[in-house]
Image 1 (cartoon, rainbow, N blue to C red):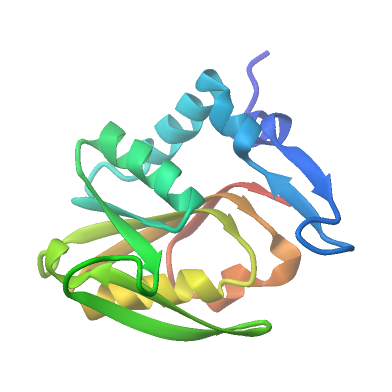
Image 2 (image 1 turned 180 degrees about the vertical axis):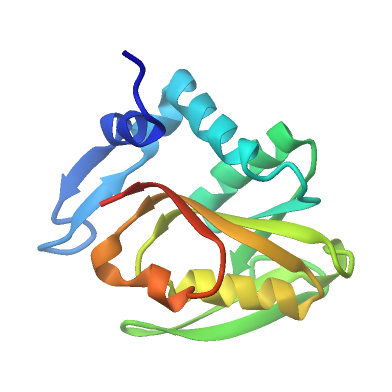
Length: 174
């Protein structure tokens, strides 16, 4: 019997209790990344839905790993969405609120041709703040963001609701 992609992902995760803070159960994807069969299946599953994109944008840091592999599989370029101050040259930035403070993310404004179809990826969808900010930042520099792909969605945190009206796909929802 073959497993679904959700079953494959769930079987390749490691739960880390009380990380990064007491009471939090962290869903660690590093065992999935270390398993070449599981990682290849994740990338193939994501790629099958997004053949028409021109670029893949990945959110720092685990989104870089997933996004670069996905961009390679699709034969397109990769755009890093980084924390402020990490990219050289001319950048576009967007600040947004987090649960306990604020953050700023940046992209190289010149790396995205106007109207380019861009897929946004990350490892986890939690509250959705970073995803919304990254999506909005990409659009502010002229991208047409076609969707948001994640490995895991933490449904109880409501991130999908913050992305209402946008194409969001999670391989596993917990």
